[in-house]
Structures are given as C-alpha cells and as structure tokens.
Length: 204
Length: 98
Image 1 (cartoon, rainbow over the protein chains, first blue to last red):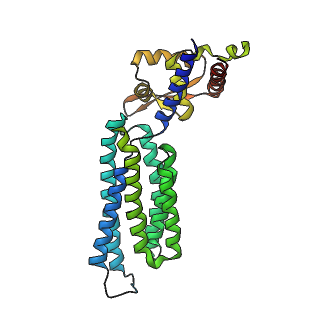
Image 2 (cartoon, one colour; image 1 turned 30 degrees about the horizontal axis):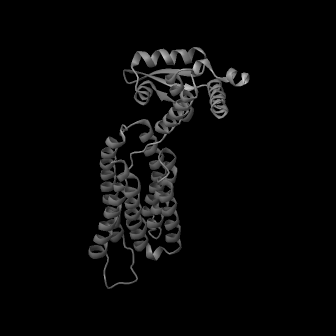
C-alpha cells in the first residue's frame, strides 16, 4: 500500500463512522410544515376558542380541553409530514429511512418528550393549567437536544432555542399563546426554511 | 519508522475489516444486515471478514432470535478498540511522514 491508499482508508473510516451513527435525512421542510400547523392551531384557537372581549382569560376546563385537542392534532399532523419529508429526502441522501440510527433518533427524542407529556398530563388532571405551554416548549426542546447526537449538527441549536423560549414562557405564563406562536410557529418556519435553503437544496 | 510499521495491524489490512471496525467504534453494536447495508458487500464476503475479526477477538458476536428470525449482533471488544486506535494513529503518522 502507498500513501494514497492510506488516505483513502482514513476517509473511508470517517465516512462510515458518520454514516453509521448519524441520520442525515431530516428535511428543513419538516420544520416549515410543523410551524405552519402550529400557526393554524393557534389561529383556530384565537378565532374560535378564546373569547375576544376578555383580556384576562380565565382557563376553564372546557377551554383547556379544546387547547389539548388542538395540540394533539398539531402534533399528529407534524409527525405525519415529518415522516413524509424524511422519506422523500432519504431517497436523495440514499439512506434507508427506518435504519437503526433513525430508531435511536426517534427513541431519544420521544423519551424526553414523553416524560414531559406525562408531567403535563398530571398537571392537567390536577387542573393546574398555567404552565402547560411552557412545559411543552421546554420538553420539546430537551427532546431535540437529546436526539441531536444521532443527527447532523442542525437540530441542537433549534432545541436550545425552544428551551430558552420555554423558560421565558415560565416567567410570563400569561403570554403562553404568543410563546406558542413564536416557539412552535415562527421559529420552526424560519429555522426550517434556512436549513432547507442552506443544506437540502444543495444536494438536489 | 520501524515502530510505525509495527503498529500497522495486519488484521485491519483490508477495506471491509477496517469498515466493520469503524462502524463498531461509534455504535454500541450493529447487526449483520446493518453492516451489509453500510458496507455494500455480499453475505459470504461479510461473514468471512467478521469471522476473521472474531478469531483475533477484536469483535464479539451475539446470536439471538427475534421472533423466528436469527439475528447476529456484533460488538467491538476492548482489545479491538485499542488495536483500532493504534492502527489509526499509525496510519496518520505514515501519511504525515510521506
């Protein structure tokens, strides 16, 4: 073997190490669609659930139930489009969609999120509604940070941003609605769009 | 120079064996199909290379059944990890010296 072969070896090693441990087919479009769903949900809440004249909104059980349904629908729709855009992108990146790295990614993301959801559910049944949105943002961000070790370095900053927004929302829980719009809506659309134009489009 | 050559490990002197070790260095374990998919090799080819690494105890093999399907999991052993690191350091030095 001459030096050229050794160099080839090293680059093959590097390539296999990252290919086998990092899932690269996440698409920026998933972020954009997640943001759009969050805004649709917020819009529905704003025009159909919240009483417009009442500035000091009192969270009754009925209103919180409607909010919960909206959140679940937004989460469900986001999950479906994320899988859809991932499967499309995996054809471009030539990566199997449901490989062991993808499984690790989903497991580490949902572990943090599920712990948070159980916590939120307990608060819900205790009829303590103040911090629901804040905790949702917080645990969602933690899930992203936790999952980021199984993907490229684009997911971690998003997780950090969501955690910070969640913490501010704990300080100002009255404005939960606007923190939802910012954290789940605007941040997702901008972040997803930037990722899409910076990374996804290049590889087409 | 002589020392460096000594650290170039004969067991890794093949692209596929080097590939198997690279994958097992960064993943806790990998099964047969995952290795096959990542390395793009045939069953027989991969089996002979995993056997070679198993023989020198650089990797550990665990066989189990998932339902009725046999599933073979591979782990890098401590010895294998150490030898792999030595091998990489030697490669890097060789490239620098040239």
